[in-house]
Amino acid sequence: MSAGETAGTGDPLPPLPPAAAAIASGYAFTGQALDLGALLWDGRCRPDAPVRIPLPVLNRHGLVAGATGTGKTKTLQLIAEQLSAQGVPVFLADVKGDLSGIARPGQRDERVLGRAGEVGQEWAATGFPTEFLALGGLGHGIPVRATITSFGPVLLAKVLQLNQTQEQSLGLIFHYADTKGLELIDLKDLRAVVAFLTSDEGRPELKDIGGLSTATAGVILRSLTAFEAQGMADFFGEPEFDTADLLRTAPDGRGVISVLELPAVQDKPLLFSTFLMWLLADLFHDLPEIGDADKPKLVFFFDEAHLLFNDASKAFLESITQTVRLIRSKGVGVFFVTQTPKDVPSDVLAQLGNRVQHALRAFTPEDQKALRATVQTFPKSSYDLEELLTGLGTGEAVVTVLSERGAPTPVAATRLRAPESLMGPVDAAELDDAVRTSALHGRYAQAVDRESAYEKLRRTPAAGPKAAPRAGKSSPEEEPSLVEQVVSSGMFRSLARSVGTQLGREITRSLFGTARRRR
Image (cartoon, rainbow, N blue to C red; front, top):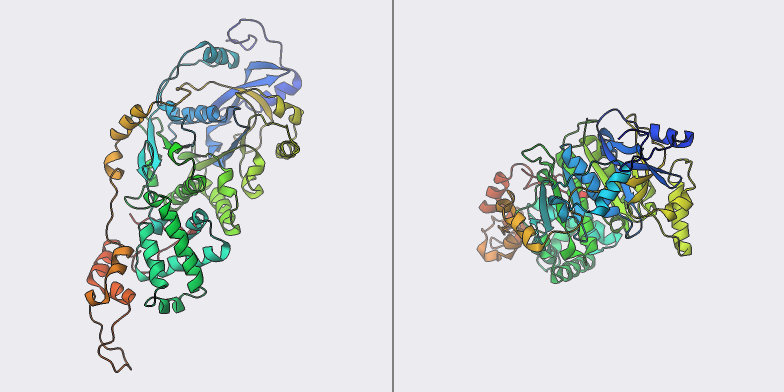
Protein backbone atom coordinates (compact mmCIF):
# COMPACT_ATOMS: atom_id res chain seq x y z
CA MET A 1 0.00 0.00 0.00
CA SER A 2 1.41 3.36 -0.98
CA ALA A 3 1.34 6.31 1.37
CA GLY A 4 -1.18 8.07 -0.83
CA GLU A 5 -3.82 5.32 -0.79
CA THR A 6 -6.48 4.30 1.69
CA ALA A 7 -5.98 0.71 2.82
CA GLY A 8 -8.29 -1.73 1.10
CA THR A 9 -9.96 0.76 -1.26
CA GLY A 10 -7.29 2.22 -3.49
CA ASP A 11 -8.81 5.70 -2.98
CA PRO A 12 -6.14 8.38 -2.71
CA LEU A 13 -5.54 9.92 0.69
CA PRO A 14 -5.10 13.68 0.89
CA PRO A 15 -1.77 14.84 2.33
CA LEU A 16 -1.65 15.04 6.09
CA PRO A 17 -2.34 18.57 7.38
CA PRO A 18 0.70 20.12 9.13
CA ALA A 19 -0.68 19.42 12.65
CA ALA A 20 -1.37 15.77 11.81
CA ALA A 21 2.00 15.42 10.08
CA ALA A 22 3.70 16.72 13.23
CA ILE A 23 1.93 14.03 15.27
CA ALA A 24 2.85 11.32 12.76
CA SER A 25 6.51 12.33 12.78
CA GLY A 26 6.56 11.78 16.56
CA TYR A 27 5.90 8.04 15.96
CA ALA A 28 8.39 7.50 13.12
CA PHE A 29 10.75 5.34 15.17
CA THR A 30 13.76 3.67 13.57
CA GLY A 31 14.19 0.71 15.94
CA GLN A 32 11.97 -2.19 16.98
CA ALA A 33 8.47 -1.09 17.96
CA LEU A 34 4.96 -2.39 18.61
CA ASP A 35 2.28 -1.29 16.16
CA LEU A 36 -0.80 0.01 17.97
CA GLY A 37 -2.82 1.32 15.06
CA ALA A 38 -3.29 4.31 12.78
CA LEU A 39 -3.85 8.02 13.39
CA LEU A 40 -7.39 9.41 13.43
CA TRP A 41 -7.68 12.94 12.02
CA ASP A 42 -10.83 14.84 11.11
CA GLY A 43 -12.87 11.67 11.59
CA ARG A 44 -10.77 9.70 9.12
CA CYS A 45 -8.34 6.84 9.76
CA ARG A 46 -4.87 7.43 8.28
CA PRO A 47 -3.00 4.15 7.67
CA ASP A 48 -0.13 6.25 6.31
CA ALA A 49 0.42 7.55 9.87
CA PRO A 50 1.05 4.51 12.12
CA VAL A 51 1.04 4.92 15.90
CA ARG A 52 3.70 2.78 17.63
CA ILE A 53 5.57 2.16 20.91
CA PRO A 54 9.36 1.63 20.83
CA LEU A 55 10.22 -1.78 22.28
CA PRO A 56 13.11 -0.53 24.50
CA VAL A 57 10.86 1.92 26.44
CA LEU A 58 8.31 -0.67 27.53
CA ASN A 59 10.16 -1.01 30.84
CA ARG A 60 9.16 2.62 31.51
CA HIS A 61 5.68 1.38 32.49
CA GLY A 62 2.27 2.36 31.21
CA LEU A 63 -1.45 2.82 31.73
CA VAL A 64 -4.36 1.36 29.79
CA ALA A 65 -7.56 3.07 30.88
CA GLY A 66 -11.14 3.56 29.77
CA ALA A 67 -14.75 2.94 30.63
CA THR A 68 -16.21 -0.58 30.62
CA GLY A 69 -16.80 -1.88 27.10
CA THR A 70 -14.43 0.49 25.30
CA GLY A 71 -11.86 -2.15 24.29
CA LYS A 72 -9.24 -2.25 27.05
CA THR A 73 -9.07 -6.06 27.02
CA LYS A 74 -8.44 -6.17 23.26
CA THR A 75 -5.69 -3.58 23.71
CA LEU A 76 -3.99 -5.81 26.29
CA GLN A 77 -4.30 -8.72 23.88
CA LEU A 78 -2.87 -6.70 20.98
CA ILE A 79 0.16 -5.52 22.98
CA ALA A 80 0.77 -8.95 24.52
CA GLU A 81 0.75 -10.64 21.10
CA GLN A 82 3.37 -8.30 19.70
CA LEU A 83 5.56 -8.54 22.77
CA SER A 84 5.48 -12.34 22.54
CA ALA A 85 6.31 -12.19 18.82
CA GLN A 86 9.41 -10.14 19.66
CA GLY A 87 10.60 -12.60 22.30
CA VAL A 88 9.32 -10.77 25.39
CA PRO A 89 7.47 -12.81 28.06
CA VAL A 90 4.17 -11.33 29.26
CA PHE A 91 2.06 -11.68 32.39
CA LEU A 92 -1.69 -11.02 32.10
CA ALA A 93 -4.24 -11.04 34.91
CA ASP A 94 -7.48 -12.28 33.33
CA VAL A 95 -10.20 -11.09 35.70
CA LYS A 96 -13.20 -11.75 33.45
CA GLY A 97 -11.89 -14.91 31.80
CA ASP A 98 -11.87 -13.58 28.24
CA LEU A 99 -8.13 -13.51 27.52
CA SER A 100 -7.56 -17.26 27.27
CA GLY A 101 -8.22 -17.07 23.52
CA ILE A 102 -4.73 -15.60 23.07
CA ALA A 103 -3.50 -19.21 22.86
CA ARG A 104 -5.55 -19.91 19.72
CA PRO A 105 -5.58 -18.34 16.24
CA GLY A 106 -8.27 -15.72 15.72
CA GLN A 107 -11.25 -16.05 13.42
CA ARG A 108 -11.14 -14.31 10.07
CA ASP A 109 -14.37 -12.41 9.52
CA GLU A 110 -15.59 -9.19 7.92
CA ARG A 111 -15.26 -7.19 11.11
CA VAL A 112 -11.64 -8.19 11.69
CA LEU A 113 -10.64 -7.75 8.05
CA GLY A 114 -12.44 -4.42 7.92
CA ARG A 115 -10.48 -3.11 10.89
CA ALA A 116 -7.22 -4.46 9.47
CA GLY A 117 -7.89 -2.71 6.17
CA GLU A 118 -8.65 0.60 7.87
CA VAL A 119 -5.36 0.68 9.76
CA GLY A 120 -3.11 -0.89 7.11
CA GLN A 121 -2.59 -4.15 9.01
CA GLU A 122 -1.62 -7.39 7.29
CA TRP A 123 -3.73 -9.59 9.53
CA ALA A 124 -2.95 -13.31 9.95
CA ALA A 125 -4.68 -15.65 12.41
CA THR A 126 -2.08 -16.60 15.04
CA GLY A 127 -2.06 -18.33 18.41
CA PHE A 128 0.67 -17.59 20.95
CA PRO A 129 2.54 -19.76 23.49
CA THR A 130 0.49 -19.50 26.67
CA GLU A 131 0.70 -20.79 30.23
CA PHE A 132 -2.48 -20.76 32.34
CA LEU A 133 -2.21 -20.09 36.08
CA ALA A 134 -4.78 -20.00 38.89
CA LEU A 135 -4.50 -18.63 42.44
CA GLY A 136 -4.34 -21.58 44.81
CA GLY A 137 -5.47 -23.81 41.97
CA LEU A 138 -9.01 -22.39 42.16
CA GLY A 139 -10.08 -22.38 38.55
CA HIS A 140 -8.37 -23.56 35.38
CA GLY A 141 -4.63 -23.21 35.74
CA ILE A 142 -1.35 -24.23 37.37
CA PRO A 143 -1.71 -23.45 41.11
CA VAL A 144 0.00 -20.25 42.24
CA ARG A 145 0.75 -20.31 45.96
CA ALA A 146 2.90 -18.24 48.31
CA THR A 147 4.17 -19.11 51.74
CA ILE A 148 3.07 -16.80 54.54
CA THR A 149 6.74 -16.12 55.35
CA SER A 150 7.39 -14.98 51.80
CA PHE A 151 4.15 -13.01 51.46
CA GLY A 152 5.08 -10.84 54.41
CA PRO A 153 3.15 -8.75 56.93
CA VAL A 154 2.36 -5.65 54.85
CA LEU A 155 0.62 -7.51 52.03
CA LEU A 156 -1.14 -9.86 54.44
CA ALA A 157 -2.36 -6.92 56.53
CA LYS A 158 -4.01 -5.48 53.43
CA VAL A 159 -5.71 -8.79 52.64
CA LEU A 160 -6.92 -9.07 56.25
CA GLN A 161 -8.01 -5.40 56.17
CA LEU A 162 -6.11 -4.58 59.34
CA ASN A 163 -5.69 -0.99 60.51
CA GLN A 164 -2.28 0.65 60.81
CA THR A 165 -1.73 -0.37 64.42
CA GLN A 166 -2.72 -3.96 63.71
CA GLU A 167 -0.50 -3.99 60.61
CA GLN A 168 2.49 -2.90 62.70
CA SER A 169 1.66 -5.57 65.28
CA LEU A 170 1.47 -8.23 62.58
CA GLY A 171 4.95 -7.14 61.51
CA LEU A 172 6.18 -7.77 65.05
CA ILE A 173 4.65 -11.26 64.97
CA PHE A 174 6.47 -12.01 61.72
CA HIS A 175 9.68 -10.68 63.28
CA TYR A 176 9.19 -13.00 66.24
CA ALA A 177 8.57 -16.03 64.00
CA ASP A 178 11.56 -15.14 61.79
CA THR A 179 14.00 -14.83 64.67
CA LYS A 180 12.73 -17.98 66.41
CA GLY A 181 12.94 -20.12 63.28
CA LEU A 182 9.19 -20.74 63.19
CA GLU A 183 8.67 -20.99 59.46
CA LEU A 184 5.24 -19.79 58.34
CA ILE A 185 4.20 -21.90 55.37
CA ASP A 186 0.42 -21.57 55.46
CA LEU A 187 -2.35 -19.84 57.43
CA LYS A 188 -2.47 -22.46 60.16
CA ASP A 189 1.20 -21.79 60.90
CA LEU A 190 0.63 -18.10 61.49
CA ARG A 191 -2.55 -18.80 63.42
CA ALA A 192 -0.59 -21.23 65.64
CA VAL A 193 2.10 -18.63 66.39
CA VAL A 194 -0.46 -15.95 67.29
CA ALA A 195 -2.45 -18.42 69.40
CA PHE A 196 0.73 -19.38 71.24
CA LEU A 197 1.62 -15.73 71.92
CA THR A 198 -1.84 -15.14 73.41
CA SER A 199 -1.78 -18.32 75.52
CA ASP A 200 -0.77 -18.46 79.19
CA GLU A 201 2.50 -20.14 78.24
CA GLY A 202 3.34 -17.81 75.38
CA ARG A 203 2.19 -14.50 76.87
CA PRO A 204 5.59 -13.87 78.55
CA GLU A 205 7.16 -14.00 75.07
CA LEU A 206 5.20 -10.82 74.23
CA LYS A 207 7.45 -8.90 76.59
CA ASP A 208 10.28 -9.42 74.11
CA ILE A 209 8.20 -7.94 71.27
CA GLY A 210 7.87 -4.23 71.92
CA GLY A 211 4.46 -2.75 71.30
CA LEU A 212 2.47 -5.95 70.77
CA SER A 213 -0.45 -6.19 73.18
CA THR A 214 -2.41 -9.31 73.97
CA ALA A 215 -5.60 -7.55 72.83
CA THR A 216 -4.18 -6.66 69.41
CA ALA A 217 -2.74 -10.14 68.94
CA GLY A 218 -6.22 -11.48 69.74
CA VAL A 219 -7.79 -9.28 67.05
CA ILE A 220 -5.26 -10.56 64.52
CA LEU A 221 -5.98 -14.15 65.55
CA ARG A 222 -9.72 -13.66 65.04
CA SER A 223 -9.09 -12.05 61.65
CA LEU A 224 -6.96 -15.02 60.58
CA THR A 225 -9.57 -17.51 61.77
CA ALA A 226 -12.35 -15.71 59.88
CA PHE A 227 -10.16 -15.40 56.79
CA GLU A 228 -9.44 -19.13 56.80
CA ALA A 229 -13.13 -19.90 57.37
CA GLN A 230 -13.89 -18.05 54.11
CA GLY A 231 -11.90 -20.65 52.17
CA MET A 232 -8.72 -18.59 51.78
CA ALA A 233 -6.31 -21.29 52.98
CA ASP A 234 -5.64 -22.66 49.46
CA PHE A 235 -3.73 -19.56 48.38
CA PHE A 236 -0.94 -20.02 50.91
CA GLY A 237 1.37 -23.00 51.09
CA GLU A 238 3.90 -25.00 49.14
CA PRO A 239 5.21 -25.56 46.57
CA GLU A 240 5.55 -21.80 46.32
CA PHE A 241 5.35 -20.38 42.81
CA ASP A 242 8.73 -19.37 41.41
CA THR A 243 8.29 -16.08 39.55
CA ALA A 244 11.27 -17.00 37.34
CA ASP A 245 8.73 -19.18 35.52
CA LEU A 246 7.15 -15.97 34.20
CA LEU A 247 10.33 -15.19 32.25
CA ARG A 248 10.33 -18.11 29.84
CA THR A 249 10.45 -18.17 26.05
CA ALA A 250 9.05 -20.87 23.79
CA PRO A 251 11.30 -23.10 21.64
CA ASP A 252 10.56 -20.86 18.63
CA GLY A 253 11.90 -17.82 20.51
CA ARG A 254 8.55 -16.19 21.22
CA GLY A 255 7.85 -14.99 24.74
CA VAL A 256 5.52 -17.16 26.83
CA ILE A 257 2.31 -15.36 27.84
CA SER A 258 1.36 -16.32 31.41
CA VAL A 259 -2.38 -15.80 31.92
CA LEU A 260 -3.55 -15.78 35.54
CA GLU A 261 -7.14 -17.00 35.36
CA LEU A 262 -9.14 -15.11 38.00
CA PRO A 263 -12.87 -15.74 37.29
CA ALA A 264 -13.05 -18.25 40.17
CA VAL A 265 -11.89 -15.55 42.63
CA GLN A 266 -13.68 -12.53 41.14
CA ASP A 267 -15.48 -12.13 44.46
CA LYS A 268 -12.13 -11.77 46.27
CA PRO A 269 -10.68 -8.70 44.54
CA LEU A 270 -8.61 -7.58 47.51
CA LEU A 271 -6.91 -10.97 47.63
CA PHE A 272 -6.02 -11.28 43.96
CA SER A 273 -4.86 -7.67 43.58
CA THR A 274 -2.55 -8.09 46.58
CA PHE A 275 -1.26 -11.40 45.20
CA LEU A 276 -0.35 -9.62 41.96
CA MET A 277 1.70 -7.17 44.01
CA TRP A 278 3.45 -10.09 45.71
CA LEU A 279 4.43 -11.46 42.30
CA LEU A 280 5.93 -8.09 41.39
CA ALA A 281 7.75 -7.76 44.71
CA ASP A 282 9.17 -11.27 44.33
CA LEU A 283 10.42 -10.46 40.83
CA PHE A 284 12.01 -7.31 42.20
CA HIS A 285 13.87 -9.31 44.86
CA ASP A 286 15.24 -11.90 42.47
CA LEU A 287 16.12 -10.09 39.26
CA PRO A 288 19.53 -8.45 38.76
CA GLU A 289 19.97 -4.85 37.68
CA ILE A 290 20.33 -4.57 33.89
CA GLY A 291 19.67 -0.87 33.26
CA ASP A 292 18.25 0.06 29.86
CA ALA A 293 18.10 -2.84 27.41
CA ASP A 294 16.99 -3.45 23.82
CA LYS A 295 13.80 -5.03 25.11
CA PRO A 296 12.19 -5.81 28.48
CA LYS A 297 12.67 -9.10 30.31
CA LEU A 298 8.95 -9.13 31.13
CA VAL A 299 5.91 -6.89 30.75
CA PHE A 300 3.41 -7.26 33.58
CA PHE A 301 -0.22 -6.15 33.09
CA PHE A 302 -1.91 -5.29 36.38
CA ASP A 303 -5.66 -5.44 35.71
CA GLU A 304 -8.28 -3.84 37.99
CA ALA A 305 -5.46 -1.71 39.39
CA HIS A 306 -7.79 0.50 41.44
CA LEU A 307 -8.36 -2.45 43.80
CA LEU A 308 -4.72 -2.30 44.81
CA PHE A 309 -4.89 1.32 45.87
CA ASN A 310 -8.30 1.40 47.56
CA ASP A 311 -7.97 1.96 51.31
CA ALA A 312 -4.22 1.32 51.13
CA SER A 313 -2.05 2.40 54.04
CA LYS A 314 0.64 5.03 53.60
CA ALA A 315 3.34 2.37 53.98
CA PHE A 316 1.66 0.21 51.35
CA LEU A 317 1.43 3.07 48.83
CA GLU A 318 5.05 4.03 49.45
CA SER A 319 6.12 0.44 48.78
CA ILE A 320 4.14 0.32 45.53
CA THR A 321 5.71 3.59 44.38
CA GLN A 322 9.19 2.36 45.22
CA THR A 323 8.65 -1.00 43.51
CA VAL A 324 7.41 0.61 40.30
CA ARG A 325 10.27 3.10 40.29
CA LEU A 326 13.02 0.54 40.89
CA ILE A 327 11.83 -2.53 38.99
CA ARG A 328 12.31 -0.69 35.70
CA SER A 329 16.09 -1.05 36.03
CA LYS A 330 15.58 -4.82 36.29
CA GLY A 331 13.96 -4.95 32.87
CA VAL A 332 10.33 -5.31 33.98
CA GLY A 333 7.64 -3.06 32.55
CA VAL A 334 4.35 -2.67 34.45
CA PHE A 335 1.09 -1.60 32.83
CA PHE A 336 -1.74 -0.66 35.17
CA VAL A 337 -5.20 -1.28 33.74
CA THR A 338 -8.15 0.62 35.17
CA GLN A 339 -10.98 2.99 34.23
CA THR A 340 -9.46 6.43 34.79
CA PRO A 341 -5.99 7.78 35.64
CA LYS A 342 -7.39 9.14 38.90
CA ASP A 343 -7.60 5.52 40.12
CA VAL A 344 -3.80 5.55 40.32
CA PRO A 345 -1.96 7.69 42.93
CA SER A 346 -0.11 10.63 41.41
CA ASP A 347 3.32 9.38 42.51
CA VAL A 348 2.72 6.14 40.61
CA LEU A 349 0.98 7.82 37.65
CA ALA A 350 4.00 10.07 37.16
CA GLN A 351 6.08 6.98 36.35
CA LEU A 352 3.72 5.65 33.65
CA GLY A 353 5.24 7.02 30.45
CA ASN A 354 3.16 5.00 27.97
CA ARG A 355 -0.56 5.79 27.91
CA VAL A 356 -3.48 4.24 26.00
CA GLN A 357 -6.68 6.00 27.07
CA HIS A 358 -9.95 4.59 25.75
CA ALA A 359 -13.26 6.46 25.86
CA LEU A 360 -14.67 7.90 29.06
CA ARG A 361 -18.28 8.61 29.94
CA ALA A 362 -19.51 11.97 31.23
CA PHE A 363 -23.06 11.18 32.34
CA THR A 364 -22.75 12.42 35.93
CA PRO A 365 -20.94 15.28 37.69
CA GLU A 366 -18.49 12.70 39.06
CA ASP A 367 -17.86 11.44 35.49
CA GLN A 368 -17.24 14.99 34.30
CA LYS A 369 -14.80 15.60 37.13
CA ALA A 370 -12.91 12.42 36.23
CA LEU A 371 -12.86 13.47 32.56
CA ARG A 372 -11.32 16.85 33.35
CA ALA A 373 -8.76 15.22 35.65
CA THR A 374 -7.81 12.77 32.88
CA VAL A 375 -7.32 15.56 30.33
CA GLN A 376 -4.96 17.34 32.72
CA THR A 377 -2.67 14.29 32.82
CA PHE A 378 -1.93 14.48 29.07
CA PRO A 379 0.67 16.67 27.35
CA LYS A 380 -0.56 19.78 25.52
CA SER A 381 -2.43 18.63 22.42
CA SER A 382 -3.91 19.77 19.11
CA TYR A 383 -7.12 17.99 20.06
CA ASP A 384 -10.02 19.09 22.22
CA LEU A 385 -9.41 16.14 24.54
CA GLU A 386 -12.62 16.48 26.56
CA GLU A 387 -14.67 16.19 23.40
CA LEU A 388 -12.44 13.54 21.87
CA LEU A 389 -12.41 11.24 24.91
CA THR A 390 -16.20 11.14 25.12
CA GLY A 391 -16.56 10.52 21.37
CA LEU A 392 -14.11 7.66 20.80
CA GLY A 393 -15.56 4.42 19.49
CA THR A 394 -14.83 0.91 20.71
CA GLY A 395 -11.28 0.00 19.76
CA GLU A 396 -10.16 3.62 19.56
CA ALA A 397 -7.93 5.41 22.05
CA VAL A 398 -5.87 8.48 22.77
CA VAL A 399 -2.20 7.52 22.86
CA THR A 400 1.02 9.10 24.05
CA VAL A 401 4.21 7.08 24.64
CA LEU A 402 7.87 7.68 25.25
CA SER A 403 10.05 8.09 22.19
CA GLU A 404 13.35 6.28 21.72
CA ARG A 405 14.99 9.29 23.39
CA GLY A 406 12.63 9.06 26.37
CA ALA A 407 10.58 12.18 25.52
CA PRO A 408 6.74 12.07 25.37
CA THR A 409 5.31 11.69 21.88
CA PRO A 410 2.51 13.97 20.66
CA VAL A 411 -0.99 12.94 21.73
CA ALA A 412 -2.52 10.82 18.94
CA ALA A 413 -6.13 9.77 18.49
CA THR A 414 -5.72 6.19 17.27
CA ARG A 415 -7.79 3.44 15.71
CA LEU A 416 -6.25 0.28 17.13
CA ARG A 417 -5.26 -2.83 15.21
CA ALA A 418 -7.18 -6.10 15.54
CA PRO A 419 -5.65 -8.88 17.68
CA GLU A 420 -4.58 -11.91 15.64
CA SER A 421 -5.50 -14.45 18.31
CA LEU A 422 -9.02 -15.47 19.30
CA MET A 423 -10.96 -12.56 20.79
CA GLY A 424 -12.81 -14.51 23.45
CA PRO A 425 -12.33 -17.40 25.88
CA VAL A 426 -11.51 -21.00 25.05
CA ASP A 427 -13.66 -23.65 26.68
CA ALA A 428 -12.90 -25.15 30.08
CA ALA A 429 -11.95 -28.57 28.70
CA GLU A 430 -9.29 -27.03 26.50
CA LEU A 431 -7.92 -25.02 29.42
CA ASP A 432 -7.73 -28.14 31.60
CA ASP A 433 -5.92 -30.03 28.85
CA ALA A 434 -3.39 -27.19 28.51
CA VAL A 435 -2.78 -27.33 32.26
CA ARG A 436 -2.31 -31.11 32.38
CA THR A 437 0.22 -31.02 29.53
CA SER A 438 2.12 -28.04 30.91
CA ALA A 439 5.78 -28.46 31.87
CA LEU A 440 4.91 -26.77 35.18
CA HIS A 441 2.17 -29.21 36.17
CA GLY A 442 4.45 -31.72 37.88
CA ARG A 443 6.11 -29.00 39.96
CA TYR A 444 3.07 -27.17 41.29
CA ALA A 445 -0.09 -29.28 40.92
CA GLN A 446 0.15 -31.16 44.21
CA ALA A 447 0.19 -29.19 47.46
CA VAL A 448 2.81 -30.17 50.07
CA ASP A 449 2.37 -29.78 53.83
CA ARG A 450 5.72 -30.29 55.53
CA GLU A 451 6.56 -29.64 59.16
CA SER A 452 6.53 -25.95 60.04
CA ALA A 453 5.39 -23.66 62.87
CA TYR A 454 2.01 -25.35 63.38
CA GLU A 455 3.47 -28.81 63.92
CA LYS A 456 6.29 -27.53 66.13
CA LEU A 457 3.98 -25.57 68.39
CA ARG A 458 1.59 -28.50 68.81
CA ARG A 459 4.21 -30.52 70.66
CA THR A 460 3.61 -30.80 74.38
CA PRO A 461 6.33 -29.79 76.82
CA ALA A 462 6.65 -33.42 77.86
CA ALA A 463 7.62 -34.39 74.34
CA GLY A 464 10.46 -31.92 74.18
CA PRO A 465 13.99 -32.28 75.58
CA LYS A 466 14.54 -31.50 79.24
CA ALA A 467 16.35 -28.26 79.90
CA ALA A 468 19.38 -27.95 82.13
CA PRO A 469 18.82 -25.88 85.31
CA ARG A 470 19.15 -22.18 84.64
CA ALA A 471 21.86 -20.22 86.42
CA GLY A 472 20.53 -18.77 89.68
CA LYS A 473 17.52 -21.09 89.71
CA SER A 474 17.12 -23.69 92.42
CA SER A 475 14.57 -25.99 90.80
CA PRO A 476 16.05 -28.75 88.60
CA GLU A 477 12.54 -29.53 87.38
CA GLU A 478 12.05 -26.18 85.60
CA GLU A 479 11.36 -26.70 81.91
CA PRO A 480 12.14 -24.35 79.00
CA SER A 481 9.38 -22.46 77.22
CA LEU A 482 7.81 -24.17 74.23
CA VAL A 483 9.60 -21.91 71.79
CA GLU A 484 12.92 -22.67 73.48
CA GLN A 485 12.22 -26.35 73.01
CA VAL A 486 11.54 -25.79 69.32
CA VAL A 487 14.70 -23.77 68.73
CA SER A 488 16.90 -26.24 70.61
CA SER A 489 15.44 -29.36 69.01
CA GLY A 490 17.49 -31.51 66.66
CA MET A 491 14.78 -31.31 64.01
CA PHE A 492 14.92 -27.52 64.07
CA ARG A 493 18.72 -27.48 63.77
CA SER A 494 18.49 -29.87 60.85
CA LEU A 495 15.92 -27.70 59.13
CA ALA A 496 18.03 -24.59 59.74
CA ARG A 497 21.02 -26.25 58.09
CA SER A 498 18.92 -27.40 55.15
CA VAL A 499 17.84 -23.91 54.18
CA GLY A 500 21.21 -22.25 54.68
CA THR A 501 21.70 -19.05 56.57
CA GLN A 502 18.23 -17.55 56.14
CA LEU A 503 16.21 -19.66 58.54
CA GLY A 504 17.09 -19.90 62.22
CA ARG A 505 17.88 -16.19 62.35
CA GLU A 506 15.98 -13.15 61.23
CA ILE A 507 14.81 -13.46 57.63
CA THR A 508 15.91 -10.69 55.28
CA ARG A 509 12.85 -8.73 54.27
CA SER A 510 12.57 -6.05 51.64
CA LEU A 511 9.76 -4.10 49.97
CA PHE A 512 6.33 -4.85 51.50
CA GLY A 513 8.10 -6.87 54.19
CA THR A 514 8.26 -9.78 51.75
CA ALA A 515 10.99 -12.34 52.37
CA ARG A 516 13.77 -12.97 49.93
CA ARG A 517 13.26 -16.35 48.30
CA ARG A 518 15.49 -19.18 49.47
CA ARG A 519 16.52 -21.18 46.42
